Length: 140
Image (cartoon, rainbow, N blue to C red; front, side):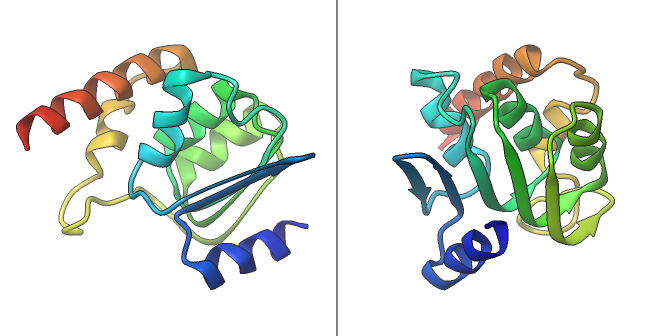
């Protein structure tokens, strides 16, 4: 099932693909937005979903855990995301495992990953990431 979803994500160039019975969610948005934005309206947006995403770091993993995700697959996944998913017994897979998720320039850690570096609960992570995304939007 996850391989089929992974192939569809790549073929259609989605940034995320989430499915459960009678529900499909896709996005072309980048970064944390495709996970965070729908969760502003409904924290359980990804409840019982199988989610395939281009990049899953600790930030995305914490949001998906908070939302009640069933299974996760990342084209790229960080070691901290793997640790969180394992601790919660959530099945996962990936194409490539990285120590950390880097920013777009590739010269530093992703700002969203920095935001949750010392956060341990998904609820705290949601609040911190939501505030960070809003502050970045204001700077543009």
